[in-house]
Amino acid sequence: EAGVAQSPRYKIIEKRQSVAFWCNPISGHATLYWYQQILGQGPKLLIQFQNNGVVDDSQLPKDRFSAERLKGVDSTLKIQPAKLEDSAVYLCASSTDRWDTEAFFGQGTRLTVV
Amino acid sequence: AQSVTQLGSHVSVSEGALVLLRCNYSSSVPPYLFWYVQYPNQGLQLLLKYTTGATLVKGINGFEAEFKKSETSFHLTKPSAHMSDAAEYFCAANSGGGADGLTFGKGTHLIIQP
Image (cartoon, rainbow over all chains, first blue to last red):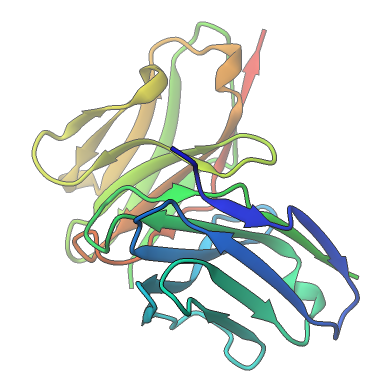
């Protein structure tokens, strides 16, 4: 079974530029999560989707971050404009549904903002 | 809001010695609890989880953890450390009956001395 795919693996941008990350969850998984992992900290939930609807985006900085999952499969996370403090690993995870207690994580996208 | 505290950002043990990684949670309602492992440049892999039932949970790679409600703890142990256990370990909690995203601790870096 293929795992959660993320791209790109690495990205370096200048502050005030925009960037987008892509996630393809495990086939058939209805729930998709985006987490932000700053160096030396645990992952922090940014947004949770159930199919193409948002379940929780309370910790998403909506003035600069946006995410979508238009067809309930792939998802993109965008940052515009980026700040230095956005440097982090962005992890995507998926589970069969909201009530499934096991989420599978992708390898992440490491973003460096200079 | 719930929180997860991991005592010790770094733990060093000798190969063959007992591994003990500490995790405490703060929640008015006992949450579901998880331990994840992260190897360098990799995503998170689930080691074990506690949802309901038996409080001693066995996971992969010889790890186990015990849920102690009276101590609000969920410490991770392994009787005999192996060099391949060197990694970052994260404790996480979910208070939504499995329906919500995870709240992670800051992580513990496990170092195995030869």
